[in-house]
Length: 84
View 1 (tube, helix red, strand yellow):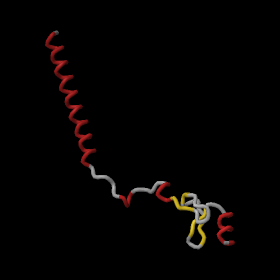
View 2 (tube, rainbow, N blue to C red):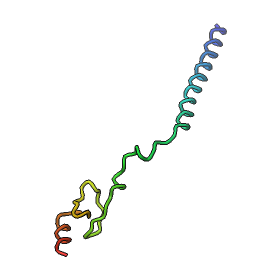
View 3 (tube, rainbow, N blue to C red):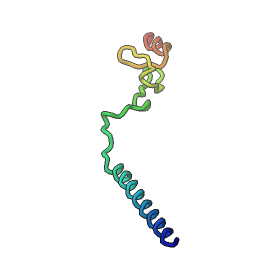
View 4 (cartoon, rainbow, N blue to C red):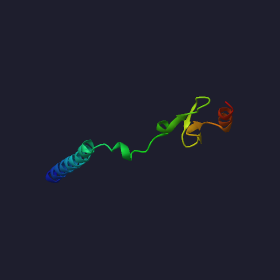
C-alpha cells in the first residue's frame, strides 16, 4: 500500500513537471516572436482624425465631408467655407 502511494506521488510530480515545462515553452515562444510590422496594423480612429477647415474640430476621416481637398465636419461648415 505504501509503495502504491509512493508511485502515485512520484507520477504526479513527474506529470506536473512535464506540464510546467510544456507551458514554459509556450511562454518562451511568445517572447521570441517578432512584433507585427506597421504595414499590417489597422489604423485606429485616432490615426485617421482630420481637422475641419472651418471650425477646427477633429473628426474621423471616414465621416468627414471632403471638398476641394479639405475636410469638414458638417454641411454648414462647407457652406461657410464657400461663402468666405
